[in-house]
Amino acid sequence: MTGKLYGLGLGPGDPELITLKAHRILQSVPVIAWPAPDTGPSFARAIAAPHLPGGQIEIPIVVPMRTERFPAKDVYDKAASEIAVHLDAGRDVAVLCEGDPFFYGSFMYVFERLAASYETEVVPGVSSMMAAASAAGRPLAARNDVLTIVPGPLDDAELTNRINAADALAIIKIGRHFKRLRALIDSLNLLPHAIYAERVSLDAQRLMPLSEVPEDTAPYFSMILIYKGGEDWIHALPRSTT
Amino acid sequence: MTGKLYGLGLGPGDPELITLKAHRILQSVPVIAWPAPDTGPSFARAIAAPHLPGGQIEIPIVVPMRTERFPAKDVYDKAASEIAVHLDAGRDVAVLCEGDPFFYGSFMYVFERLAASYETEVVPGVSSMMAAASAAGRPLAARNDVLTIVPGPLDDAELTNRINAADALAIIKIGRHFKRLRALIDSLNLLPHAIYAERVSLDAQRLMPLSEVPEDTAPYFSMILIYKGGEDWIHALPRSTT
Image 1 (cartoon, each protein chain N blue to C red):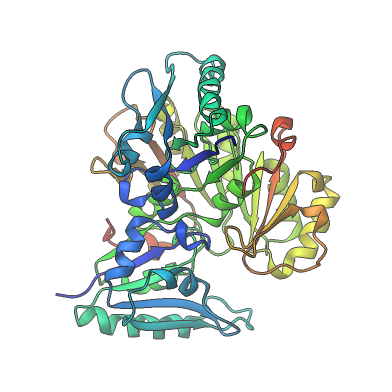
Image 2 (image 1 turned 90 degrees about the vertical axis):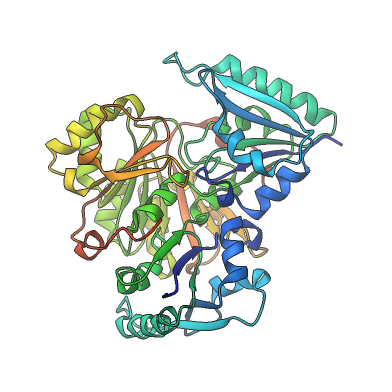
């Protein structure tokens, strides 16, 4: 009997925003694997930490952040091999994922290497995009709005087309593209409609109008939400949500 | 001291896919309110049912399904008044929401009536869109994909533009628009790239290529996912996920 592979969505950061199902699996699997940058700790591991019973085998998947080449093929090849050894030995393995595993997550690189050979279950999680809207006290999209999710690394022409076409947008993966993105949004006269959200649901959460962000850079775990509709009732509401 | 209003995301349907936070709040609030169609039971209430301690006050928000007029203003006015009575008396009230409260949810109609006057917290939940991708064993979006969420009631010209522009799409609110949507997707030669997902994460889950759906209608809790990229490795994978 080979083990089962889980892609485990852990939500946006608050350990209380994991699902009962993810919690049960964390408490029972003998092996966990988790992504980490080579520049610091693993965010996914930190979300799971309060829920781990202790004693499990751990497989770090350390992804170099300094290269432009992504996915880091060798890293995922090696991780898949290590995970496969445990699956072959009949041990279940949970790959920890921030947010939702299949919403722009790196879990796909493990999945594509192993899901054809081993029983695999993906457990969805709360996306940071949903958590950002909740924290901002504004619906992400409503009624017949078209909502577009746009990765920040796209070029200005492509971004402009996407921003012009959508009713509501979430711009993700902003990081080092932050300054360029803010200038572009300003040039489209949409600064008053844009919210900046960073590390949502954590104690370090920052949430403010994009126009008020003092820095010219943003961390990886941040996003911009743009609301174009004339929903003044939303904009007029106090930020009573937490 | 007035009570606190919660918009409580309960996830896609499997009661195990609610968050620890939603679970804690369900166990403690003295009053719950939940939407229901006038034609059947409340889906949100059903997701919460296994987690309710019993004895709480319940406020049904019965939304007529036979009218084209939405939101049903009087229904939400009345519900907000009933909820406000409890908040004024110092009792916390949780409004139960399928999926995520601020992702096309009806909670916004309660929120817009009460959030300016009462402390309000929106607790994000797992969206059925994320759960559908997990169940299908295919990432919803990856790398620099643009993901667009499109409501099915939009007209064919608008839908065509949206479908042509996106890398990946989720078409939601399909219901009685199903037959028209399938014909449109076929006319764009995208049937081989489309997945139909219904009641994801429940025992009654149905998941199949759109081309294989025998009916000409779909229930409210269904969606279509379209993947346009040449990600053959995804399409070639067995449906090993559950």
